[in-house]
Length: 136
Length: 183
Image (cartoon, each protein chain N blue to C red):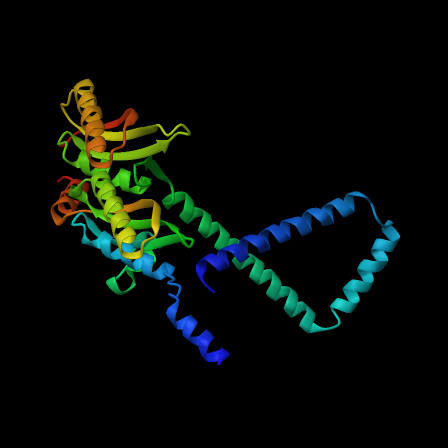
């Protein structure tokens, strides 16, 4: 019967796999937060302070451009003060690229990093506050 | 509607308003109608418009919306100018952008470690060629040799910024605003 033959043919042929932008963003976000120098991902400013994203929503800190074969990601993040911003950024770029390529098979053209801020330790904050105090 | 779509719509609306306004002014410059005809038409529109209070309410509402739109655009511009400027460096894997506010934070943190400095304020300029210039306004503590401390600040800051952020600073200009004397 013609109908069943065409059905069998459809089942035997491999289906198309599509990876969504959200998946790329999640992979990138997960890999980024693994780096010890990264405090978290950010989505810009809320008033005067940075909006650090919670883990449930951290993929919002990643912008993804993609077509069927290639992708470019832009990650907005905050680093620890004593980690070396540039070093952390280049490490994240390399790890995210490898991660996306191995997990999705897509070619990663670029991994861009936006360092929106730096988190300071309590000691540094105290030092800053002490200097601002008026002397007696 | 997400933020990006709203921003795009706002932009289109603004451009539309500017185009309409420019066309209206252009039409007026051609003197399309005589003064008498203009007066007659204005009178007609005026009386028919103010016949119904609803027309006035609609006009008031449009004015309010335009006012709020202007406030929104001003806020957006201020946020952009304060926070979206950054220094870009190309790497093997893409670009690394470090915001100017981050650089300023790093500068103020380093200057805190220099005991001779009482207060400081920094400005970071990024020139078209990608060169970075830093201007420091400093209040020093008393009995400090100014040329020596200036050299130390410039050297430490340049090395520190390169080590932490990979940024090569071209110029560090120091302005000693005041010397602080303790009583």
